Image 1 (cartoon, rainbow, N blue to C red):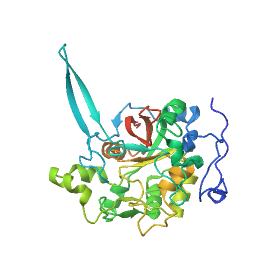
Image 2: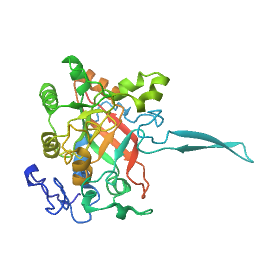
Image 3: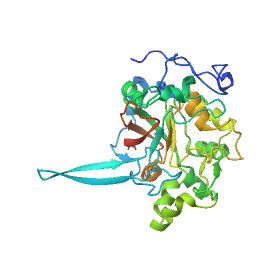
Image 4: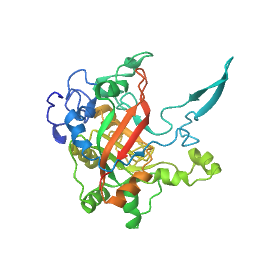
Length: 330
């Protein structure tokens, strides 16, 4: 059995470490915490989530490792080579990836509070010297077996199309909390502590429709930016008080990007408050197309989800999502 967890403080009680950056929840789960909101994934939440499995339908939510074919921010492209190994007739595969270039969970080393340079639990870059395992995502696998629990999908993209809202997922734009609340009411959604939230904004659907030439030009598109959940005190409060253990989207940024755009308070972003403040994994570029179709067909928006980050103890900040499945029920 999991140890008794402290209750989640109210949003207005943040920051917990008064000497730290705004909104932090440092120390809620002890002075050496490496799991943050993943502490909410307990044996009890996993057992309850397993009740979602009735049909046994399985859907992968990770995009191919070679998508986008031309990553943004000059990140290295996926590379695959076949090595002919002798003297026996056999082959090996070698791949090179930037773990930030396709489906990923942003880990707690990825992003700091920008003014102070402080990462989750008051760590600094100096704590992540080569070989350091502090805040490595391997802790997610070692201590929790991965991100495993009840998933909830908010299909904003389908809702927006029905309501004549046309925002380009390749340009900076906000999924507003008023939209989210309308979808919650329309679909009669409710959340449980430890849920894993997914928001579909239509990014992978549009990218899959691009020609090879358009994919090559994607990093240099004008105007740039990305569609994502608005980063406001209202949206931060909602995510905190809903009790999510992790949040993800098909967007490459989860929140509206770039995160330092003029529309944002420079101290208010999910990458700062979520990753560095709360230890809340942010999932990006998840392939939610087949999942959304299955949920619409059944009129059900909750499911069992299992995601196993790459088990590398010194992985610097993030991982591609491996083995992520949806199991629906009628």
